[in-house]
Length: 176
Image 1 (cartoon, helix red, strand yellow):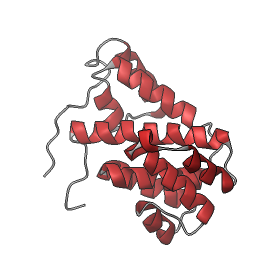
Image 2 (tube, rainbow, N blue to C red):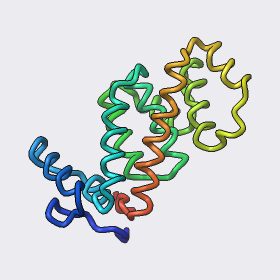
Image 3 (cartoon, rainbow, N blue to C red):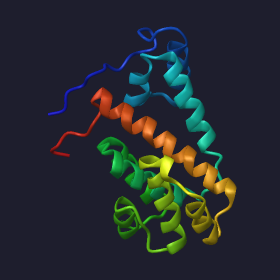
């Protein structure tokens, strides 16, 4: 059984701007997810998460590949909630079960994609060790500097959500 460490908040319970943000989401979408309502303990965190999330929807990385990056990163972080969300999003983006399994292992059947997934994991695990040769390798697979820069955003958003869910105790039940 999972133990929640932080409680989800309603708009009336959330401090400052977080209450307004939750109320706006409720009005536009009819519901607020568990992670978002729990992030509302910090107006700054909630606002930053929502802004980064919206911005990352405008990246040039193809949606299916973005989900592969997210699956690889979440597997490394260990957030079951995020991993399941990206598995479902990956399926919706057209990923096969093999694509999902390979992404969770930090690779892809496509060498171009495997290079970008490898970069994402290096950005997450050892950004200080990245070298000019690492970037040259990714560029040799045809990836632009824009895509390379956007990988940092995808990794950062996944680290934020995964770390927050783990800290807050938002995880699937072990029986799931």
